[in-house]
Amino acid sequence: MVTTALKRPQSFAADRDLPGATDLLAGAGAERVARFLEERGLDPHRVEPVQAHYRPGRWLAVCFRTGAVDRTSGRPVCPIVTVECRGGESDMVWAFPDDPALPGLVAATDAELVRRRLRPRPAGVTVEPLRYRPRRRAVLRYRLHDGRVLFGKVVKPGRGQRLLDLNEALGATGLKLALPAGRVARGALVLPCLPGNSLRNLLLTGRLLPIPDRVAALSEDLHRLCSPLLASGEMAADRSAIRRRVDPATALCAAQMVARLLPGEGCVAGRVAEAVIAWAEESEPHEEWIVHGDLYENQVLVDRESLGLIDLDDLGSGDPLLDAANFTAHLLVLGASGQPAGARILRYREELQASFCRRLDADPAALAWREAYCLLRLVSGPFRVLHPDWPRRMSDRLALAATAVRSRR
Image (cartoon, rainbow, N blue to C red; front, side):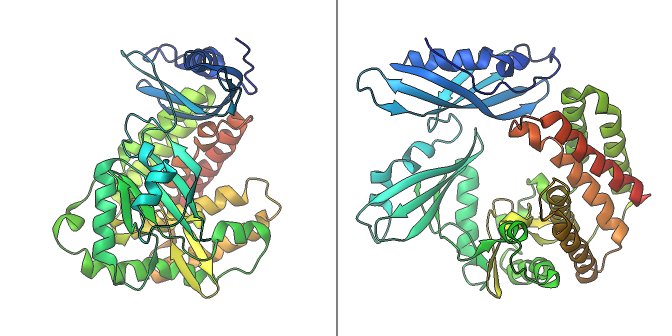
């Protein structure tokens, strides 16, 4: 066996309720992946952890990017392999696309099967994996040989059916929404390619931006046009998406994650969570709207004067101020991350905050404490992508959340 782990991220303190979790990043995970590949006739030469999805005391899943050679053909292959440990269970190992929770993923990555399911049927399809989160979702790009581009999204079957139902309900709104037009298998959806560039790309590259008030108006547009169509039946009854409301358990879970990964920062994270929960209990709830559920700059596509929305998995009834706070919190993290366009991004954020408050008739303090909640949830992002300097970057994000709490007071 010839295996080189090109990146061994800094690990974290032992989790007594999840023995072996720390070892997945310290080397045992790479060794387990190498054995998995060898058992399938592949000689690995590179095993690199690139994602970590963790719930302290419950589970840790680590994705590895690999490089190997097929012993039979001599052909190079680069499978993505996930190792997952759960308390009281044997480790699970699988290679993309054989995800145990996404039964439609294998079909969605089969170019010939996708070609046969599309209408009109193209001459050929090339499949390009874009994003993958184990057990949760995958996003693919389909390049049709006639030049067209579509996207594939694979989610759990129940969520996939809900997205299809949303498409049927919202087909006549006039909004540019990236909702599925069909499916190739259970939970494996086909979506249109909306025109335009992401707002994130425009911010980072210094290009012309839509006026902040127009972006803030998306919340009103979404509610005004979608509310009559989702006002009854199962669409309105769906209250399961915790992204659409401030959730005390989520705040505590985010603080627990910080305490596990950065033990010296656990008290700060706990104070942020306690403050957010107290404000949530004391505050008058905002009128519920139809909201995006995960609104931020990378979900907005700008096509000249027109705006579109993507990633509508959590669309439904919720708190519009939380959508606004999620947007401004993401911009704060992006602007404070050392990007050359940082100052421009932060100025845009300030203007967007004012626009949201005006359009939602909200006190800036009500937006501020929700922003602290969103920032706390974003703290673990650098660990999830295994950034080489994730402890410092997590600490920097936590400082932003703590500052938001102090400013609210």
